[in-house]
Every structure is written in structure tokens, then in C-alpha cells.
Image 1 (cartoon, rainbow, N blue to C red):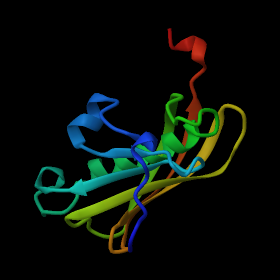
Image 2 (spheres, rainbow, N blue to C red; image 1 turned 45 degrees about the vertical axis):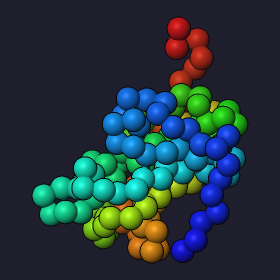
Image 3 (cartoon, rainbow, N blue to C red; image 1 turned 180 degrees about the horizontal axis):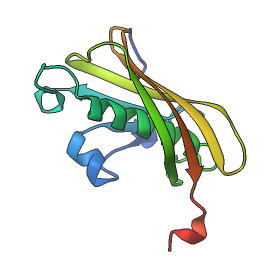
Image 4 (cartoon, helix red, strand yellow; image 1 turned 90 degrees about the vertical axis):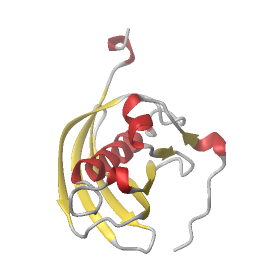
Length: 142
């Protein structure tokens, strides 16, 4: 599976401590779906030498939150909070690039229902998620 590389203007790097620690990149080039990329290395694996479930869930959470953000902000930086999220683990995540992508399935003005899919570069689906995400009003941020 060959993915076209987005230009740097559509990539978000090192925006949060978690993003810097784990090393994923957020991609908002699609304009409607947030994506998170991670090149899986030994620092991301569990004792079974596969992608740690917490890291997989983090990627899905970020891709879904970014997807929500894109509904109100083309930069993908408007804050959304995760109200609830369930992750289903399907296959082990092996070394290589994994990509989490969010898709809106419903919702309204303040709550969105967003599904996520985490896929290995070879096309294997590693995990999926379903979640409810809430827009954070700007006045609450100050």
C-alpha cells in the first residue's frame, strides 16, 4: 500500500507532550478525516514485541479527535474531548508504519460519534474504535 505524502503544512508535530513522547505525526491534509502516523519501533511494543494496546488506542483517540476538530477548524487544532471510546484489537501491530484514521458517523453541534481504524502499512487492520467526542467551547479554554 503506497500512500501519498502530505506536504509539511498539513502535518502537526510535537504539539503535545504525549505526541512528542510517543512520536506520532498528525495529518490534516484530507480536510475531513484526521490521521495519525507512527513508525513502530521497539519503544512502542509490549512484552510480546507487538504494538502496545495503549499506544494503539492513543493513535485512534487522536485521529478521531482531530477528525472532530476538522469540522470546525481547518487546521485541526480546535480542542475536542473524548467522552467515551471503545477499542477492538484485531491483529498484532508489527514494526513498520501504522496509520489511524477517524470517520464521523453521526452527532450534532457539540457531540460527534466517530469511528477509528488503525491499519499497518501492509493493509492489515490492527484495531478499530468507536467513540463519542465533545467540542470544547473556546471561552472554556482561557
